[in-house]
Image (cartoon, rainbow, N blue to C red; front, side, top):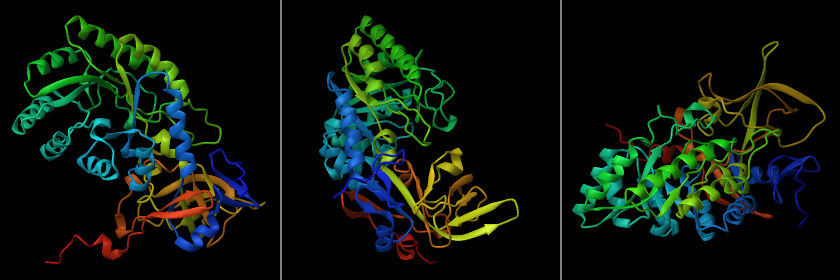
Length: 423
């Protein structure tokens, strides 16, 4: 079938005869079959981004661990696992999903500041590659639980290098004031403590400074600080296997955005990691799935308040919360191109003033029943969705050339109330 014309900035989404397509599927025809709101993902885009990472790091021994927090749909995870990537998890639920689709434990790393005893036990039983330990107390608890099971737990110490990632403060994780990691100046003593713990096996060092990073100089600074600590540890006789630089590479949310590629990242971190002689781990999430997805929603009403106009759609902040909590920008387009324009706030039906997708946006004219696409929504869209106002979560669809598959059914009211009981 004819290739989609990529006249948007998002790969594999484009217009044909004024109608929006994902790969070779018309969005309008898709919605006629599955309804709205619907998350649409391009399989081709996902595979393309995976290949970009694999090609970028092919000349250095690197484990690429996909960050499940970005999007943990089982069908998407299966594509990633079949590409022989690893999994970066932050919860027991993510470990469950990773194992369910077949990720081997030897390719799973586990970060997060508040791992429960149950989650630690689960990961120890599964024999994961490494816990990324975020505090002295966590290290001691992992040792105690591993002893109970007669096992040795593999750990890497997550250091906090006090590097400003120059991104939104809520997704900055490498500053000294953040809750994540162990202060780089205290880390050496934590490693020495770990050496004395009988049920701990030290395997690496971990550093993750934030998300949606577009300035690679901050990666360089973080990697250099991490490498210097590795050299100090070697002088103390502490030998490691893995140099984990985390993830967080940014994507395009605006047409004019210029963002670094996986190859640009590799050119920065590989020379530094190679000086240590350690195997490299990177943890991309958003940069694999973000641009591969869009949220499609239907116009319910137009509202004119004099000098202020509103387009009210059937999707809300419960489906895509990033604009509400981060004031994040997502590019918004009409599914049907027209010569006429409208400038309005694109808002949802939820009873919160913060329920919006875009403020004062100019898009092609829409009317009741028309469709709107919110782009670059593949990451932290579905995975952060919730049921506020007792709203069912959106259906999810994977596009593969001219075919589509439902990969998550739409919830209904019965599903939402399934675990509740009347007293």
